[in-house]
Length: 394
Ligand code: AMP
Image (cartoon, rainbow, N blue to C red; front, side):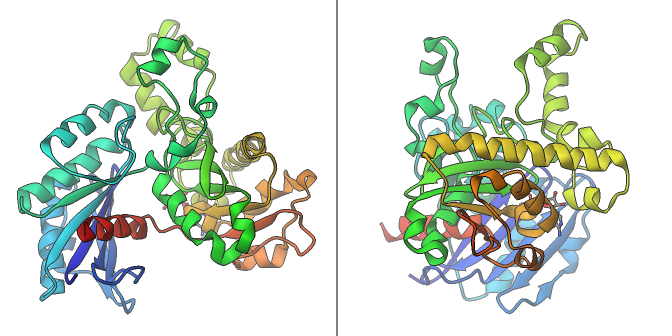
């Protein structure tokens, strides 16, 4: 199969993209890049397979009024120019929520779009942008096949008990259950675990995806057994702007005693909480690490404490712990956060090698550690590209 696969991963203010050769399984991307700061001060950057940077004028003359729908056709035109003789065969999208219905990569049809639209309230920060990208590609060239790859899909292997809320049965039956997210990232890490852990990869592993969004997944035999995000991507760990786990009584109090509307609470919990809310300074871990303000340190301490408690709380679902993997922006880059989380887990026999951690080696646990600790960069785009290759081969 000759030609290209394009992957699109749209967040609320960004579009991450990558172009892969459809006929070369597991080959790295030919072009990768990101449009960031959409709605504020958009910037565009791309790198080719040689690591050379591209910042083409038409894609940098962007203004805050440009939306995802304006930017994606420009990006597509630029990519087609770059790739010349390589026709675009398929576009694969990260779609955050597949609900109960979509547990595999799925070809986009009008019916599928209608069902995915209905899930937007469950992922208001992400799903509308994921779907906007699909619509933008369809408007640009309706004949290009598109598939959706779901962040919820990886968690289908969990036992029912791990997915239930303690709510009346009827609500669970209608789909108010824990779905879990970051599934493309977990699928990628699961796929490369044997390279790094050998047979231990089939054991009991907790992957900590720590970025702007944060979650953990407890795996056994490289399958999801429990995860920290739930019905929505709001649950679990402290995130950049999201609260994570909260006593539900706080929401009742905010609405009943402080007169906040549902929309006010949504904005508070999705956009004004987490590291940003607690520090009052930034949603960005790196900024907080550089700050000397006590509020910044407190936000980091809360992030770390919740991460350690949550990691320990996942262990019963897999009956022990053989390895921990750190991934995503914070997990891959912040040695102090990794060290602080691990120092609260020493009682498990988990010990870091401080020098390996500072260097960001792949293996950062000490030789005598009962638990292996790894740092592995995630690659959601590679998972989407492989799903596209599988569809093209059908
Ligand atoms: P992601 O969503 O995976 O892109 O991760 C974004 C998060 O990673 C932000 O909180 C960044 O501040 C954080 N991050 C990226 N690089 C570093 C670094 N060198 N040190 C600490 N945090 C970092």
